[in-house]
Image 1 (cartoon, rainbow over the protein chains, first blue to last red):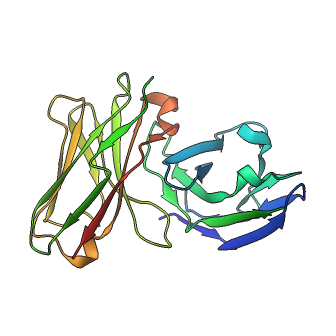
Image 2: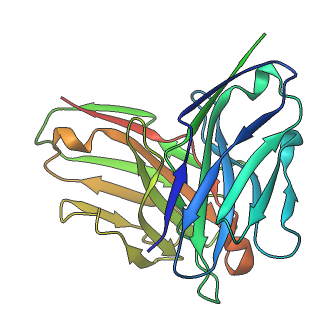
Length: 116
Length: 115
């Protein structure tokens, strides 16, 4: 079975400051990793994904994440946040059984609040 | 690409009533997923379809829940004899098959309140 732990439920930060949202996972098989963002009253939107290859992945809106297999982590970072980044961020994994498969296992989410 | 749509966006019902939600996926997507999200939690997987075949169901999907995708296009999720614990946001997502199946596109959700 897989599980995802997002270590911070809320992260307040000032505008233009850097931010890191932490995500750790547990799995007995290899996984694919994802970050989704949910703006108020909107659906989940894919920010970025790690399937294979370079462990540093870049996504939309200036976000990036680094896959660390030894630490089973996939932390999300942005060097300078904007007010518009205020949203809830979800880390998710999908087990890799060698074929296409799709159901996602989500963490509980981190609410990012960017203050002026 | 008009995105994933869900109807209704909000539903208030009394305990014991049946409710049905609809999801229209992105037109060229073969796969369709249902998730449930309760307050303070991330989405939890319920079930998914590839075309009209229901390929996987979570143990969260009790006997009171049934999902269909009769023609491989839109899907419905029905909850019978609703309970207060069913109050949640019900999310639908769709994707292609193959490696692109990992890119799931979510709809805005249907918020169910059971009184």
